[in-house]
Length: 367
Ligand SMILES: *Cc1c(COP(=O)(O)O)cnc(C)c1O
Image 1 (cartoon, protein in one colour):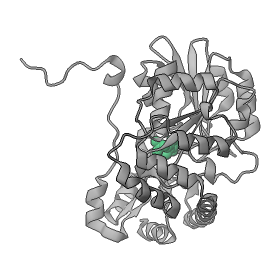
Image 2 (image 1 turned 30 degrees about the vertical axis):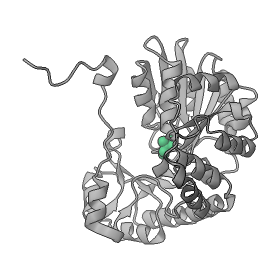
Image 3 (image 1 turned 180 degrees about the vertical axis):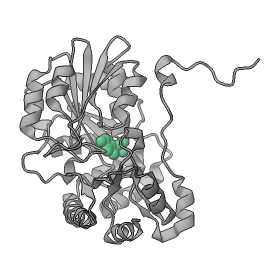
Image 4 (image 1 turned 120 degrees about the vertical axis):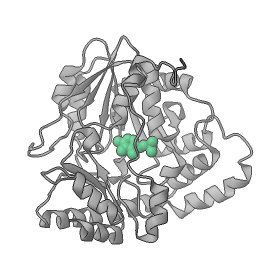
């Protein structure tokens, strides 16, 4: 008898491969320009023209390996963030960094804490490291201020002596919820120095709540803090895969030990550096998103739907009944949104803020 599959390890046995939901290339062929892609939180304004120009300039050099240190991008980031270049690690998207962090700091004898409706990569990174997941119940769906948000008190209480990592996303995907600087400072004051607190700030650039700036200033006081960000969302470079982690020199040097030398390609390095040099484009993207999200949420609420608060470029919508048929009806009309069954939120759909035309198509297609 031949075995079709070799034996995966225990953690991998419990996982399923990433399900993108739909065959997007096929859908693009079918629907063409009228396809509304509101499933992946991409920036409908597209990237800065400076990023596109930088790619064109870098193109003739793609026969060479990329700079394994990403020196120019790190220097630009260090200046932008007011940290040392040695405090930054670059990743093939921040997804890769979230995975690497688990591999570097957790193992089968340790545990990792994250929120029930925290970012989907957190449990995968935990499983890949073979660590024990501690999934902390989220705030309730009817919580007045932050339905389904991270319960920071419960998360701090869940951290035990073998907890090596606590993953937080602020704002969080898929809920859109957030916590302010004071709440994070209070959490960090309760976390032992042996637990690394990873704050995923993928949506940082979209935040307009004055009480939430960033976790970065807390790095001075808390060397057990690592902050991750990405060029995929506000900078609109999702297809190139660039993210970064900021932490103490010591923690970053540990991440560097497992990082694949050429993990960020040369076009991505050039484009990210150029994007960082165009703050006006980010400001435009933020202003567009705020205006459009406000409009879209109001339109959805006027149809009697419950829209959760959001500081991101998407909204989580509660249909208060199984949303699978709604998702399917939208799909048949060329409107892609993200179903939430995988998060055990089958009555919700996550809808990215698109262009006005895309958002109008969504509203028209809603059954
Ligand atoms: C989109 C997203 C990321 C970014 O992933 P990349 O790998 O950088 O594209 C990270 N965290 C959260 C919470 C996200 O929603």
